[in-house]
Image (cartoon, rainbow, N blue to C red; front, side):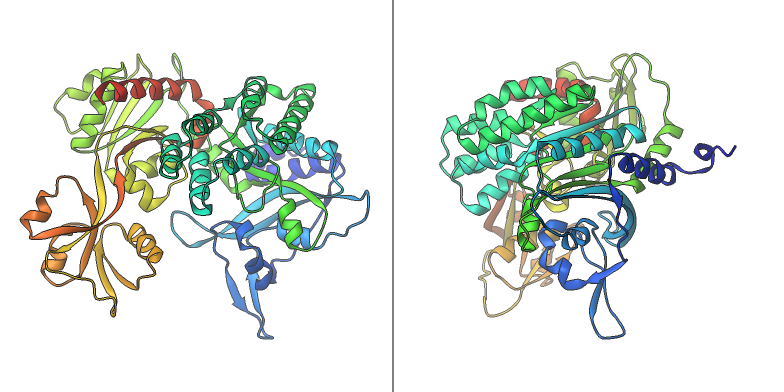
Length: 530
């Protein structure tokens, strides 16, 4: 008898295991083509998020695309009738941009779509299957569930302009209360509503624990219906014996343009990113001119390679789970380490003179390592570090997929535009901008509708306008002494900058207690030093 578990890799085996699981629940396999008309994806680009689309022109001159998504192809081919519910499953390759390289990758996905006249029965079944899917992949997993009716219901009550509301929603997704609060206060939101928003962002945990907290957010009938739906889903999951593997977490926001109800993400211990993602997407159906409800999810099987690697590299745990902490080399890193040490998260060998970059305290299950400041977010996003401290300038420039847990109130400076004292902007020509932060500069000047030529530099930014390489620079300014010494002055303020405590999203799921303990200690230290 052939032992397929010994022959097949995890992703290959998962295809067949999950296909069998979905078949047991009546899901019919849907085989899509590799190509679609480009226009289909262009019309629904919001649903695809920020991923690019790989296009080509076929022999008949039509613009075609390698499919970046399976859901859209299935949704457009469904039929509608009263009481009809169609259930499909798939395992297909999609083609998306890699965050790291910026090039296209072929990604193997499996998943399900349930479309039609939906009731709580179908919604609960899909979420149950999401949990069962994670169960097929690994023993240690968690499904995080949120509801856009609650998240958008609360943010709508803030009465913010559209751009500010989008900023608050992004902050909710990052668990970034300090950022959300700043936006609210800038727009005159009452402290009572800011406090309620903070409670929403901090509401994550077991089904019972979070449902009790959500009663504070029931401020209208829309939120009431969403809370009642979550309560019903929670009861179904508990009845299925799956309650201990599910958490309610309102930082799950997915793609907010199309998801309109329950949304969820699945994490597996050993994989640094969400392996499963889904939710209710009636808004996509409406855009396609259909009245059906729709809910589904996809599983990124390519990520299972990370699980195999993690199992190969895993060392036996002794006395608890180790927290890996990435600190930036230099003055900021030393200052931040002192804050960690002051609240009991120290490492005795840290002060010893050596060229070591990794320091461990096995007694306290801590491991610190020094990395280049601009690399801290990479180590955290990729899961090598569970938490780290990084300047907000790096977060604004690279937009990593991490939680932003705390403003450390140190490393304080500002992102600014500077130029020679005699310089005046000639709006008739292209503005030459020298910077280490091309993305920040591009966004800032796009908001001003200004035509610019970005000159990417890695150091000595201040001499660029002096030597005629650029008209202005975009850089962080702390005291302004370097600008004065080079006969430059600040022309415009872009954003305040400080150091932030960040966390890997998957690490936060499986080391919540440990990371929250560190965050609480550092928060108290920040208040003491303020």
